[in-house]
Image 1 (cartoon, rainbow, N blue to C red):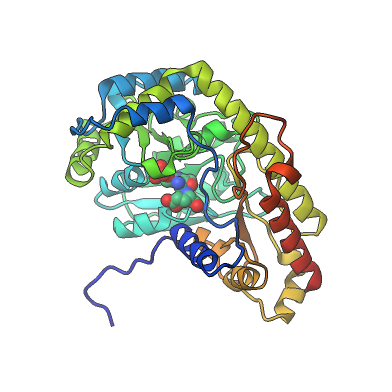
Image 2: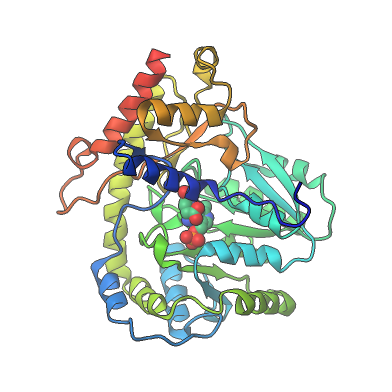
Length: 411
Ligand code: PMP
Ligand code: GLU
């Protein structure tokens, strides 16, 4: 009986990474669809900038290097039409800690979290001592929330402050919102005076390069988070940024800076210098994004087409590198094999085929939903730029999808 320590498991994303590595160390072949890590290297100029900045060993201000924040502000104005003053940008070692600190800035709040959504939101809200309200979605709704879902969720409010967490293109589903949908969500959030944390970390990886930032529809109370982990392939460098709304309450901003100063101090100085190069050259970045998106779109469509043809229902992704296949059409057959839950589905799939997926329970679903996340990142960036050929450039993707399909056919 534990009356002393907080109960918190290791994050399921990091756990699947460790488990896959363990199997690989035992010489087992694993198709790594579990952990969502970009296969692309940061652009050469950014790698060079990092190499050259190792002697920058000083701390920066908590908010981050002012010149870097100027570049970030200009970059997102060009890419997303965002008007964010550099003074309202916070830079930190990853968006994960920024998201946590935003939640920590509140003494007590209701946190509305869609299901499915990224693994860490709910554990973070729990650590911060908040009241979690789950917003349910369905396959037919494309796993998206709408104004009705929010209003329904708000009926369970207990506190004065409420925070809605949005994430699009989404992890785990790869789906986004249309502009009219965003307008509708913004109108509802505003009418309920909610703070919206809009996690747009996959925004620049929208497959049609049509990402609309929430801040443009709800400038009164949106905090946007983004960073280098996804579009720039630099998850392990730990670099994130938050854009605060223009008229943020001074006490709230002070709390964010205060908590940052008492936890991470600042993002690593050499990484901030490399980030300047990433954000400075709009045209280079644009080419780099075009190249990645072309490949991700190709692979995402390959995966969803093949799974759908076996009645493993899935929406074709619109951004990022995830899909969220629903195996419920095969429920009876799977139940027959003793597979009742998404955890059992993923466990058996990993043991019997070597394909790693993450179960829907990690994303806020009840155990008996036979849904799992597939991160289609098990490929290497082609050495030379040529039209991406999935058979040649993504053999593990082809193998992994074939294994899933054969495994289901056999059941
Ligand atoms: N939000 C989402 C939706 C994510 O998938 C991730 C995973 N990297 C994060 C936030 C955290 O990203 P980071 O801390 O690497 O910036
Ligand atoms: N965001 C990645 C994922 O969902 C992994 C990194 C993390 O969770 O911190 O798989």
